[in-house]
Amino acid sequence: MHPMQCPACKDEVLVTLELHDIEVDYCTGCRGLWLDAGELELLFGDRGMAEGFLHAGATTAEEAPRKCPICNTQMEQHTTDGAHAVTWDGCPHDDGLWLDHGELGAILQHGSDAPGGETIAASLRAMFPAESA
Ligand SMILES: [Zn+2]
Ligand SMILES: [Zn+2]
Image 1: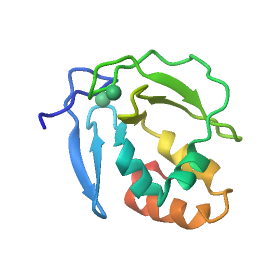
Image 2: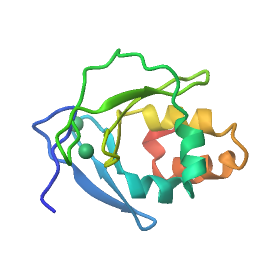
Image 3: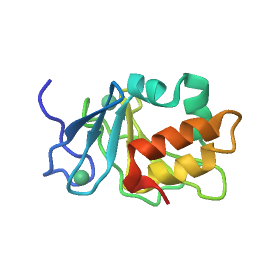
Image 4: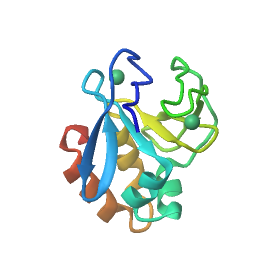
């Protein structure tokens, strides 16, 4: 697969990081993260847990729209609930999702409240130390 362009910076190419057998695409320019749909489930352990972390509430369009680095379709914005709400961009064709720098940290903070969430949040914080609040 040819390198993906960063959906936020556009002129930067995403680099692939391999962490515990999970591939994450990372932008060295803006430090955003792209997670493929399948990688997301691996990252959180299962789909239910991923949904618990990413629970989408009402969409607030505060961020500039981004295009999916895989299919180039404009992504949909989703906002988590919780005290540290995060707006993330998801491909409407389920290719994956984009997190700006710091958003994973906020999602982990929110997801830690879910049953079993604290263990996953702790291992993800160890994988992404820069995202720890
Ligand atoms: Zn970028
Ligand atoms: Zn897509």
